[in-house]
Image 1: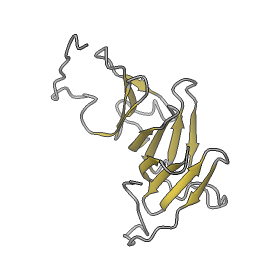
Image 2: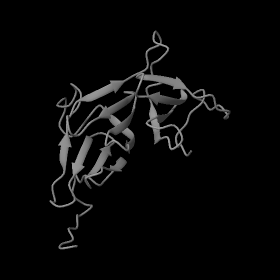
Image 3: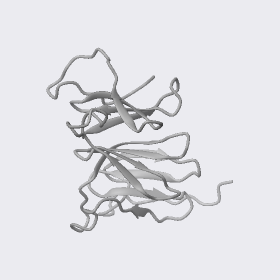
Image 4: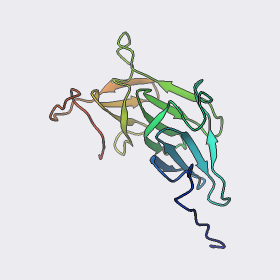
Amino acid sequence: RLERIHTYAAQEPNAIWRYFSGVTLDHEGNLWIGKDSRGLFRHDGISPEFRQIPFGSEYDRKPNTYDKQIRAMLTDKSGIIWIGTILEGLFKYDPNSEPFIHYSYNPENPHSISGDEAFGIHESGIYPNRIYVGLRGGGLDMYNPQTGYFKPVNVAFGSDMFGGSVRAILE
């Protein structure tokens, strides 16, 4: 039942809804918003407040700036929130236990993610619990949570100036 509608003025200088780059809704109805230069925020849908969720050691570097530039977000069936970033790879976040797990490209590890610019995230409907990650210059990877490994998915697509990018995923 709707009791109250809250409106926000877009002119506010640090308004959360300006320049957001990723959004996902969790199983409890919380709205998660990724900002280009201000990180990760959670809104419970009830209060007018947005809670900033810190992750990484760079969190307090400069006021109103943040090194983790979020590009894609997904809440999977188990409630895990996946966060794709520019230059920082992929983050896995469990809101119940609140640790962040960071996945980044490591040329020495054949099971690492294939790039650090994650622009698309999709949970597979065919392969249970598998997560696809679209990468700028790294193609398409599939993450297997049982092994903790990323595996490149062999797809035929035209190359771009980055050597093959996947920005959106539909299965």
